[in-house]
Image 1 (spheres, rainbow, N blue to C red):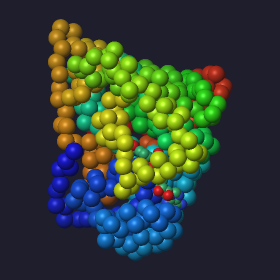
Image 2: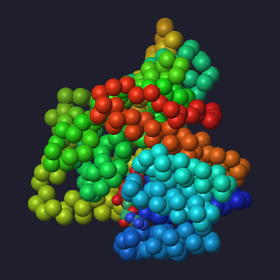
Image 3: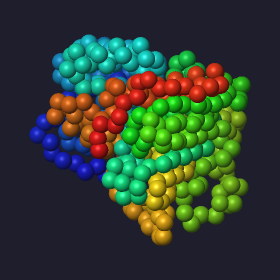
Image 4: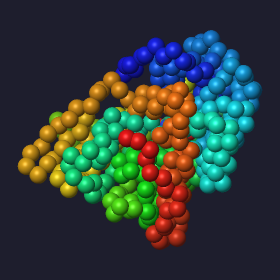
Length: 400
Ligand SMILES: NC(=O)c1ccc[n+]([C@@H]2O[C@H](COP(=O)([O-])OP(=O)(O)OC[C@H]3O[C@@H](n4cnc5c(N)ncnc54)[C@H](O)[C@@H]3O)[C@@H](O)[C@H]2O)c1
């Protein structure tokens, strides 16, 4: 997956906190963009810092605060586990660094509000890494909404069935209080994509989320009905129980029955069940961090294609395909290809760079991140209360 490297005159000096799997996917994109210079990293694990030193001649710190006080750092990319986002964002903003943080931005509104006003007060950029919303297929569908070529947008349905629960997990990923479970970890992408296509302004949410395996007691599925202010409706399903993988709906020319009986079926469950020692899962997760081996496809396309997304307009339906999107119009069908060498990560990293250069908020800024956070909290609360909840913190997408 090539980046389209441009030699930018202005290079933003970047420091990274948290060298895990998430950072491992992003670092090559920052490194090849041309507008960033990676100058520092922090991780509490010395092994991770050593791996980083083997690739970059940069400063390394065990303490995140020391990275934030490094005068060479202008921008801090925060990729620590979800429960540390607030602490690290606050640290970076207080030391007058721009911030680009992994999703979800924070775990509650109070934290979101503090950092949004601090970033504003210090005239700093605050952006959330909702990279899959920048995936070319999603951006193309958003452009179809804006230019109206298929009439008005009416409905979106996005359903994903994966093995999330049974992949190697840290204890915090299996604890909802610490931002674990599918709604906190996968929902930010799914709801961000739905908000991006629909324009941002969700009116209400009615949802169910469930804990179905008491040995891994964290919400591992959700089903949500969202209604936008303009009447557009959406459903979002995420099931991480590794019984069925819905990616099969987006793969053409494949024998579905063969896939169902292949070794791929329930492979994450089997691997977990075969682990003999309780530390094996932690070691496997650690081996997938920055500098290690990611066992799964890690492109935005592979995430986006994890299940059927069907977008209905007045004059046609659109679905995802392995090459781009397919449009089913009133009288004919056609395929539109999207660039295979461009990933959502390139889009979000480039857009954030432009926002720093142009001294304007990024598209996925703090207010946008807070609005997606509101949906995540609503999924949890609507499920608990068994009722529809009205949203109060939604913002429209900036552009396009
Ligand atoms: N956008 C994506 O597709 C994507 C993919 C994976 C992860 N993520 C996000 O990245 C974040 C991290 O997830 P992960 O799966 O990479 O986790 P991980 O456990 O693999 O990595 C976290 C890293 O942070 C380090 N760390 C923990 N506490 C620290 C501290 N106080 N100071 C410095 N370093 C510290 C750990 O040692 C580890 O190396 C989460 O917010 C997650 O949602 C995003």
